[in-house]
Image (cartoon, rainbow, N blue to C red; front, side, top):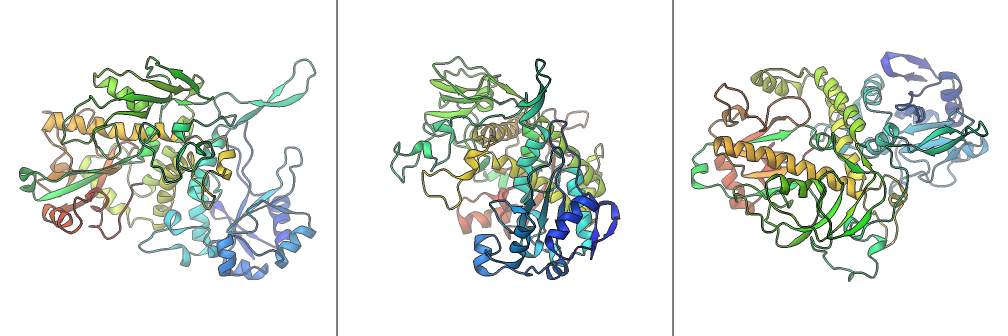
Length: 545
């Protein structure tokens, strides 16, 4: 057997069983990846087993229906017995698509190998592949090594889904503990690391999703919590009918914010410690937390979505908001008087390093696809169009990087899967289960978009007709974003508005359809959000990056 490694290296593999393969990986090949932070740990090596390797090591090339539902090999499989005899252990997930085989750590030396089995759907098409034309099923071992090796080098060694990897990247860049020397005894011991998430704190009722144990007995089983009972910071999902004047323009054009969630995480102050409950607080925009405040008195142009709700509707009374949303109300010049709040006095830029790692990975991969920063706008649009067919493997790396950013933020408020209502689920035991941080990122994403829409409206009296997550649709006299994005008298993009470019936070062309197409969608489906359909005309509804 041969092992195809990062950088084109090919190794002969003498191992004839899974236990022997694990031993070879750790003792002879010494595969792995160095730590991303000095207080962290080196990444465990990952082996991707192709179908020929599965046959060699006595593993099925496909799981049975029962095994697929369980997500692991059935107990009693010969390979499981081999591992047990060799005193190797498996995590609670068992031997599934992403299997972790380990022995207790021996001092500083790690004794763990991760297996990735694509034939068992380890590389789900929704995250790792191209839905329209999947490449992974026919990808050769060298190409697969290039694809996953590039991702591992630029982001980190995959730890399962891209969402799981996104969360693990946060931990790898901010390990919760560090080694501290006791000056009195000279011994080293573990201590909480500054700037990291170090403890599991008591959850806040307004911040948790439905079904959380803290809500047991508080509400009827099928009670729909209101904004005054639940923090509802989500991405935009808003649309409105076109005006008669807008219908005279022949096109609707969508622009999409690059890496919107990652860009929102940059320089965002989030809570690190536990919450403090405060009654009648003075609002402090530098203090992360959740605030119960009435913003229904704020009236803005109805041709724009409200910045205070995901559906773009004007608030109807008191509601819970994350700090970025309330701070934006203050920025617009409106008074705010919170009724109560849960604030976090210990805070910092926990996501800064995470953003920088993903930004660098994204920019390097875009450069591989022929798109670099500093390009003229028309050249950028042409390069983006050509990038889709420039390098299929690098295009998959790009998709995985974007899915890592979005999925990592989503994991901060992972919901139960198959757990009964009001019973705890495994994610709640993580220090990184922090719905307040997710809410702050999503609020910032929405506020950033609204701020730019306001700038465009002020500069050109131009208003969007739909916003979906990170895509904004405008009526346009031509098919290109250059046909409607406003310019200064000097011919430059309007300061503070949408700017075409490759960097996170800038925008690219998402799609163009005719105004007649938009009207047909409204006739067929009612007032539908065309921002989610504009890329391909509604063939496959999207949900942003």
